[in-house]
Length: 224
Image (cartoon, rainbow, N blue to C red; front, side, top):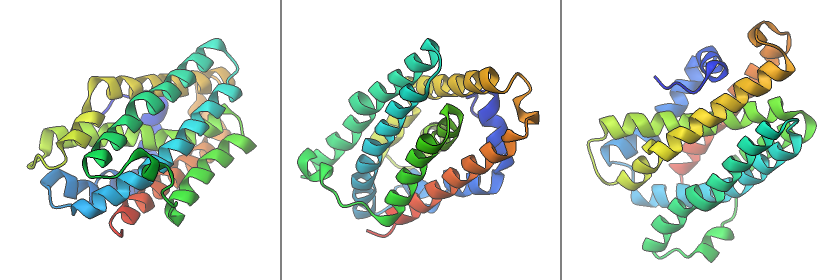
């Protein structure tokens, strides 16, 4: 099991059913054994590229919502990682399949993509840094857990590039950093015993909703 901080572990354990549906979705298992159709994978990658554009904007909003230099630094590093590293994976795989970056950029958003990205952005616009981080966390940490598990369990090399990217030390370090940021933000605003705060239930609800939207995103990937 991953070690991405106290708050993440508590939230993940509070939504075990949806978390399992997300991290062990049929799309994920298809990457593990190589049975996922290539058309579905490329459809997902195009949608995920658009998702990452909005996700990067949400992390930029986290810089705005930050109240300390340490928070600003952590959020800005995540923005840089998304734009300069993670999106590079999508561009490289798609270009090898004859899909240019210009084509990626104008990919029409599916409803599932729209629902998820706008939920995250709205969490940031209407709330504070905590509301935003909790909406962002399932994507970051979930992919970290998926990448680690598939790297150990994969029986096919078909999707090895994707798996390697999310199992990499760099990505795992990013997950740890986001976990530390979440713990720091919670402690600074609510206190050390943040899980006893009346606000904790609402934050866990946001985490659950974002996790359920991740499940919907995988399901969308299966229907090009």
